[in-house]
Image 1 (cartoon, rainbow, N blue to C red):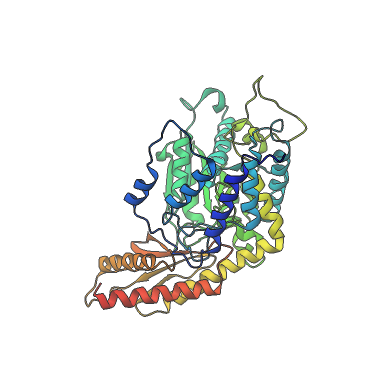
Image 2: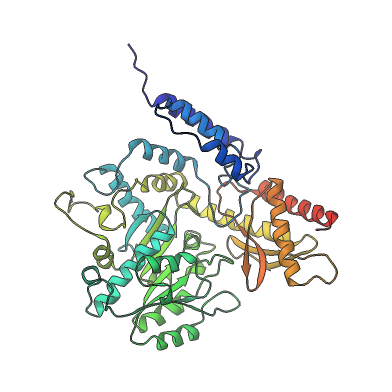
Amino acid sequence: MTTISPFRPALERALSHALAHLDHLEQQPVGARASLDTLRARLSKQLGDGGTPAAQVIDELAADTAGGITGSAGGRFFGWVIGGALPAALAADWLTSAWDQNAAAYACAPAVTVIEEVCGAWLKELLGLPRGASFALTSGCQMAHATALAAARNALLARRGWDVERDGLCGAPPIRILSGDQFHASITRAARLLGLGTGAVTGLPVNQAGQLEAATLQQALIDSAGAAVIVLLQAGDLNIGAYDRFAELIPLAHRYGAWVHVDGAFGLWANASARYRHLLAGVAQADSWATDGHKWLNVPYDSGFAFIADAAAQRRAMSYEASYVAHSDQVREPADWNPEWSRRGRGVAAYAALRELGRGGVEAMIERCCAAAHALVTGIAALPGVELVWEPQVNQGLVRFLDPTPGAIQSDHDRWTDAVTSAVLASGEALFSNTSWRGKRCMRVSVCNWQTGDADVARAVAAVAHALRSLEMAGG
């Protein structure tokens, strides 16, 4: 007698719904359509005493969320910096959930632990980082920053005779974080999490290219005499994809005894491309680096990577041993390097993505996204009434829409820019996000999805053109 697996009905329904979503991304609106009230009304069911068959739960979940799922998995999603999911990465992520391994230790996740070892080595090779650097697979770049900065805190205070892991921060020497003023908010959140406080973060003025100048940094280092200093450099800032001049700034920071951390949430991946790696010259001299997997590597959430040149500092900041925790000296125990113990096997999806692409595939994907971003930004900028604010050097660019009303002032252009972006979203043809940059409201264009191609670019440009015509005819 054949026994049907209790998992099969629900998993088969999940597969059907997943394929229906993925296979129809080109026909579906990119933005969500269901209202907040609608989603709450559908999903806020009474939790009764009796259960519901698993397959029915999945069917109802798919029905109740209809219209509330954005098309971020597809090729016409250009908001924020969000990638999609490669087929192998998505399938491997499903296996990760099915295997249900706690990836904290080799004893409870042998294969997943080895996968992380291999994945870390591959990533360092692709990203041009020192082979001897340690690493952590985190939930995203936010926690990658926290992990790297925890190692920095440990190392800098140890140089001053302070054991922060034992004695905490009360009475400890002060720590300052110096950065160009375009740093991401995840840095201030990391400073809060680590007990440094947002007041420890100083944003320094940058030049017209969004780069921190050596003279500016040097003066800030001089002014910080007596403090332990972390210098944060950008490998692709959030608005224009600016890269600091690492070969110049890292040796300067080291002369003053500073730790250099690189925020490469998406931009560090340019090192995988022969065409773009000149932007990262000298980056391997830094002390730590952070990047995301769920951006340009196109793996499902959650996936971030931290790398630290001083492996001992990272281990001192993260590791903890107890009698009930199995520990092997023959393998890299993930809990020695990560901020969490209980965690899923994040390395499986990244491993699968790298296997699917290979070095050449990663390089081609990076270059394809950069080309699409350039075509998209310049194509939109060529439309009447559009200002090119920043031409992409990688995958990020800015445009601005000028209010055609006679006598329009800057606040009118800001309002018009938001209105055009909203109109494009309402069309369902594409999704962009807006930002304020140097006092101007801009549409931010970001291309991170492996599926974005020429047809997606043309469709998005046409959607912007249609939105402009419709708003002008309606009188704004």
